[in-house]
Image (cartoon, rainbow, N blue to C red; front, side):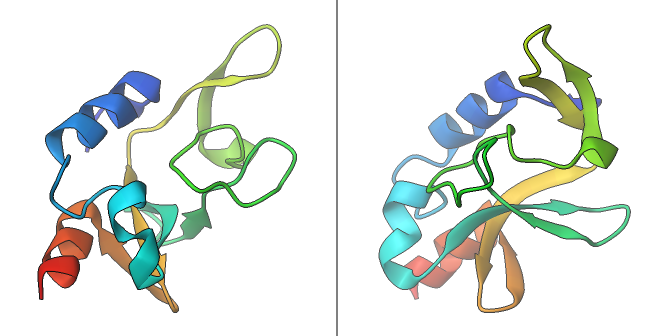
Length: 106
């Protein structure tokens, strides 16, 4: 678990998982939806835009206040709790990026 999760972390993860099936644009056709799992509480947070609409990619702006570490002056989330793991939900199950990649290759 890192110190915090931010946009740079998500960009780095996307680059690392490019072409593996561990990104939204590569596994959406299998039914995966982007989400975060809090490894401390086991709560899953589906990715949402700030206005509550489901997001098709990993975004921080729809996360609840209890996992937000830092916001900009305009209210945008700059950092979230480091115990958050980005991944996907399929049905009621959480998949890490690695799990989703393995699933899409199977």
